[in-house]
Amino acid sequence: MSKPLAVRALAWTAAVAALLATFALYHRPEFLVNLADQLWSCF
Image (cartoon, rainbow, N blue to C red; front, side, top):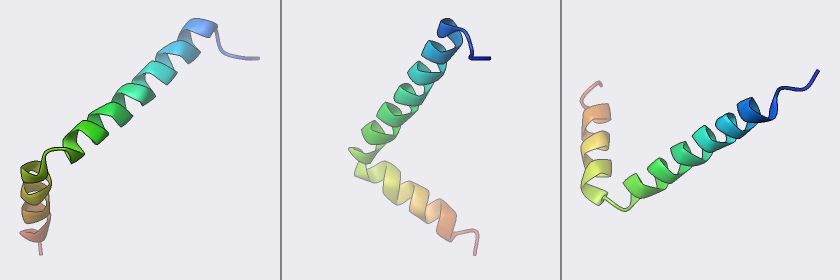
């Protein structure tokens, strides 16, 4: 059986919000540098 429309709409909304948040972070280079530094410090 297919899922109710409300559940599918909520899932799509969450996916789009996650993508928009990711794209927004790419416009902040200092965030990416900080993330790379934290990742590099693990090695």
